[in-house]
Image (cartoon, rainbow, N blue to C red):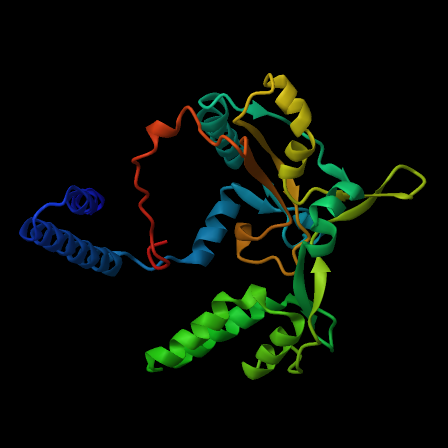
Amino acid sequence: ITKQGSTVRQLKKDGAGADVIEEAVRALQALKISATELSEKLQGDEPEFNRKSFDDLIIRKMFVVPSFEIHGGVKGLFDLGPPACGLKAAMIDLWRKHFVLAENMLEMECTCLTPEVVLKTSGHVDRFTDLMVRDPQTGECFRADKLLEDAIDDLLEKNPTMDSATKDEHLKVQRQADAFSPEELDKLLLQYECKAPSGEPYSPSFPFNLMFRTSIGPEGTAIGFLRPETAQGLFVNFRRLLDLNAQKMPFAAAQIGLGFRNEIAPRSGLLRVREFCMGEIEHFVDPNDKSHPNFPSVADKELVLFGRDDQ
């Protein structure tokens, strides 16, 4: 499909005859139809994925186990067992070879503990938040936008015959769930009849900062945070990196290490955790000259993007 799409675009660019272009377009459409039919057939043949059995397997084989399990555990924290440690080491090695070494990037390893002034400057102190609600009876906390998304999923599942226009309106609200103001989110939670586990309406939503706060030094006057991402260490060292690179741009800086986010309601196993390894690359370019010596190698490359269902 990708190759035929390129052929169609090239024919149009070259000013080919209408008949030739039309024939190429028909061939492209036929390929898309075949791909859709094949995808539906494969999906029909695939057995249903059993998430619970998978989670039990990776714990039993000690790929990943809940942290502090004998003491009741803590949501969002996991320990890697021997198989996962080997897998992680191999993935990091591949990441480093594919990006850092192949592209001659400047790798750093920065501290996980970050002073407040750095994250205040970057906006994290004021804006690195999610909206949270509480169960008024138990005090249990929930992430408000996820409650709204789940409520819409339940509504659509219970109404399979809903007309497409109404369904699209609900999906539009769902896609924008993390962009609503507290007041807008409160109205939508009531509209979709979201109730706390106690059966009562949730409390009004309010922002909750996702960074782990601590103090640096025995005096307790210097505030710090566990880094929520690995980018800040690269940004604050930009001047030294530029000097190391003989004042030449473009260049890229890379870092891989731990990040920490105090998630409101960790769930979905390893998809939403409070401590995780992340790899990050920052490319620095001259705003007046954005040319790159390797650009010709990717100039004509076309990306194959998958839709939501295929992902």
